[in-house]
Length: 412
Image 1 (cartoon, rainbow, N blue to C red):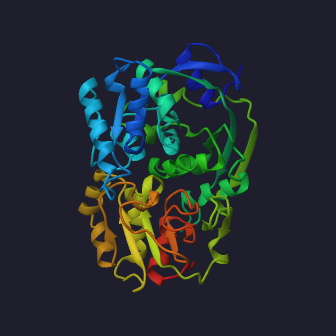
Image 2 (image 1 turned 45 degrees about the vertical axis):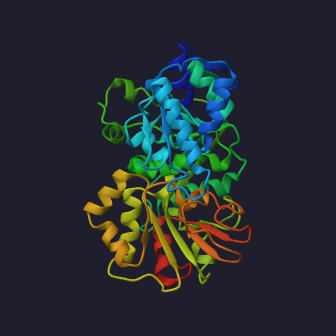
């Protein structure tokens, strides 16, 4: 029997072949609890009667959405998480280190072939290193905390094959937005998106993270890339036979195959207020912009900040634009500080904030009001996400976001 990458990962964990539709119980390598869901997970954990966690070394608590706190009850989540960690011996607690989805691979937790669950829908990001990862609710997470396992239905897989070299100014953000537009927001519901082809192989792990991060915006259960030498280097592990075998079999069965030529991709944006409302930037020229947000678990990495800095070097943002830059992690912040990227962005007029989720989830400053327009590099443009329900959110690549900040309007 020929298998997709996700089927192989599940089969390796349960010790037998699996096929789409099978209901299996899988051991969990990593579980991540963020600050938003911490107190709810803990409450359910106690309600279920557990007296110990399954493995304190495999549990990661990350505070990122509520930092710095902006509401009086935000710190309740921190106190609840800290008390839980102390009671059960959980050492992997990140309080000011950055966004959960950046840290779960950057800090060395999730590796190729792992199975990971988290209390946030963008847990799908970890597929960038060839792992199965997906978001769950706090009740399911409470069960994992106590047992170390969970049941899951093996998903079908959509193969997304991209060949060729992207044109200058086109990024992985443009690629995934175009794919979401083609699939629609529900086109991959409870399926895996397997990204492959020479274009994906040429991408950095950071660029692949952007792709897998947004797989859920098409309804996917996970997004995943085939691990390679770049993956091994990023994860600081040897590129051995175990990793080399983490690839789909020739002749594996897919529910759908999408094929693209890299040269056909152009800069695009997701227009208000749906992630699959995709239009070429050329159709949006002249749209006035009030604010630009560069950051999030989608595009807050060093290469994203560098791409924006390349546009803005020696220039100033438009006077009326508020330009907010939020690195995805403390490590990214330090790297961008050391190589001069943050200096370029600061001289261009950017407000540089502490690493975290920031404006992506409507927290930590920068919220907008009726009829204002924001160009943002994050993953969702839903009504009310960044202010009132009449705020217009355009999702874009770091390159297009920087140009919007520079000219004060959407431009090619």
